[in-house]
Length: 136
Image (cartoon, rainbow, N blue to C red):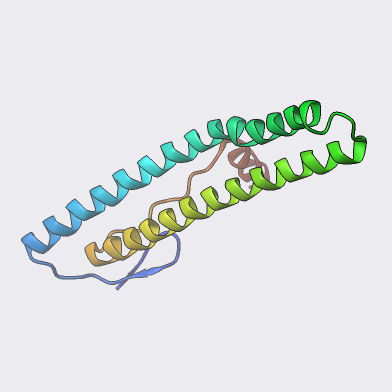
């Protein structure tokens, strides 16, 4: 057994060439799927405009047409309802995305362990790098 850079003990596994090829192909597929989900997450951010904007616009239209004679309380209720609908949609989409990426991440970890690969180094962002250099 050897210890990887993050501290997790990795087992050295003996695999046949065919088993190794299958696992490497599956790892490539999992990595591609993770990339697709990252793209999907970016598109979800763009969808936020519609998810929040459409219910809010409907609330304003309802206020100006159906509830024209009502007071400010009706406006607040309509806008609150619009935001509640928007956040419900957002949280459901985020939960589905999170569940899918968690499954892929767990599968990738299992495959990497079977292949005896070390865990990848975490990405260090420029501000974290500067803090790390200041502390040393």
